[in-house]
Image 1 (tube, rainbow, N blue to C red):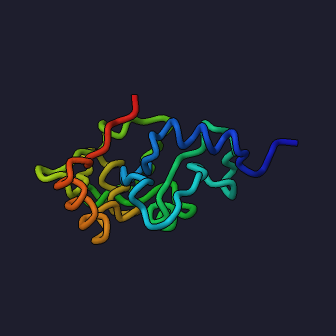
Image 2: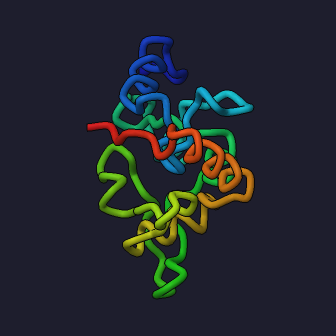
Image 3: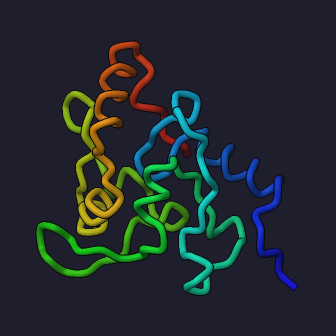
Length: 144
């Protein structure tokens, strides 16, 4: 029978692979007020497995906003599209930082839909990004 829970080994692998950053909003766990979660990209309720290929590191805000969503509406085109999938897609193909590194800009229908659905530019994140940028520790490096 497949394991239903994320093992300690899987959890460590997910954190290392993400370089300690939320794989959606790129927040850094070391500066977070709440612990991060290892979440199922495709929810178990929709047939997603607990394999590491279906797990991502998410801050509490992104995890709460995503919940069981896998699709959302592209605010520019209106079509329903898949949300960003950290195991199958590269962050930089779908998102970019604005000129002062406070806002995440969606570059594609998937990027725009994910920015809106997960609220990747929540006010608390904007404030934290400003402070961290001024200290020279934002934006975080991109995992390879």
